[in-house]
Length: 298
Ligand code: NAD
Image 1 (cartoon, helix red, strand yellow):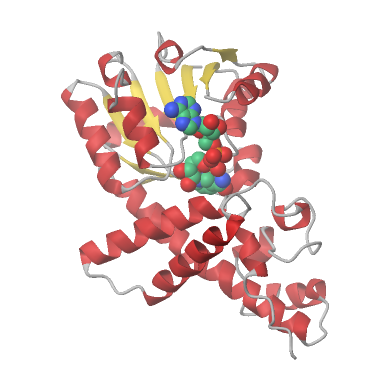
Image 2: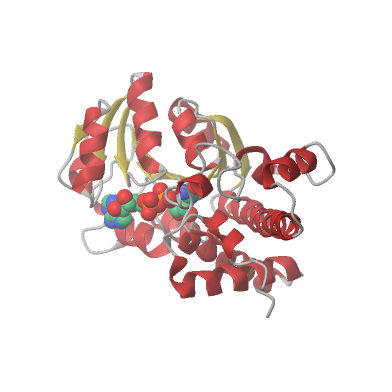
């Protein structure tokens, strides 16, 4: 068993850290939200007062933060952890950020003699709670193998996509595809509903037909088709529209840089940005279902 300092206990980080404690690791936690810390202490972790405190004496530092500036600030900003980490510690950043930011943070830590991998995840809040996440890692083979000690207790798959930054590229490819599936599934369900079909029956039909996909299997966007998913809870919890919009922005930046052609990714990026601008940023990303409502006939 290992000692772990965990920073960022939100929708994803909270249950991930709880699974580490449940597996028997010694887990110290820090978040800007006191409530989030309290929940983890009840799950068996120890509270730390600051990020500097949480990393003291641990084997692994895991961070799960929203975006580039949070991760860069934590490791390289004023009082950044780069000056306090020790060379025997491994930093595992599970946030979804740009591959440039991952390479920048990883590079600066490496200069200070500290190991780093980017390890963004797929599987959503359900996967975080169940400990079935997929980790999509970038880093040396040695560091990724070393990280398995903790990753295996939070997920069921650990992939190495390549060197530092490669995990983030693979992750945004996946999320761009996910956004297309979510919008497409929402459109199909709204179309069926507008023509008098029961969305439960239509979901079951498509699930057993060629339209089958992850959103129909575990994350149906239509309220009350599936229990325990954000759509049946007023789109609360889950993966925020703001975060999906961020990921789709990253995908477009990456596509532009590489000269890749991504018309569907560009379209979903615009849809999610516009949905966020209409005040839905903190709702779950499956709420895009309501963006594609039928127009009322006059
Ligand atoms: P969240 O907003 O629920 O949680 C982020 C947490 O980080 C919050 O509790 C916040 O207080 C904390 N935080 C921010 N800055 C901090 C700092 N400097 N020090 C300590 N704590 C700080 O977000 P989330 O849904 O848990 O997502 C986290 C990351 O995982 C994002 O990059 C997201 O894109 C990615 N992700 C999310 C999902 C999902 O389904 N929610 C799925 C896969 C990947």
